[in-house]
Length: 200
Image (cartoon, rainbow, N blue to C red):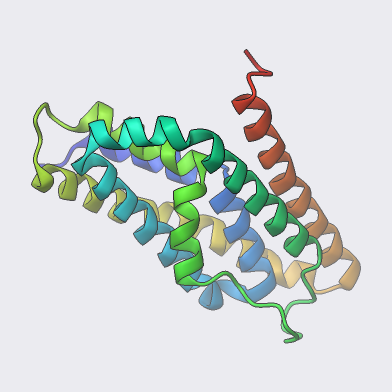
């Protein structure tokens, strides 16, 4: 049976701007859609695995997340700042060099320090798992996450790949990469400020 509210929730969380989607759009611009596929698959598989683990042990996961939230936020923000610096230094499309897109494993592992991913999986598990649900229900939740998430995040990689032809000039590409870098750094700053209670 199709759980439309769950699918709508996962689609909304997957398609809205966040660290993953900013990085996917930037990768699409700098490396094209095909070379961004491992990054995309890493995001989807990583968040689905995270969903399975969190939903399978919700009480444990929530206690663990509360205890580790400050260091996770610090690591996640630090990683976003590093990615912002890397993005600002990204080169011309198709010029080779040392620049490489984020791979499957790196993208999958990033989900564990991505605050938006944690928010998505914890909320989905709380809202959509029936009481006393077993691992089968958690696996179903993870499968929905995988099936819905992948096409949603693919939109960002496709959009980046489409922009690629418009950004062949060094000045245009540099402006795009700086803009993406600023957005990633601003995301890290917003997450850190929110965690510090500055928006309360």
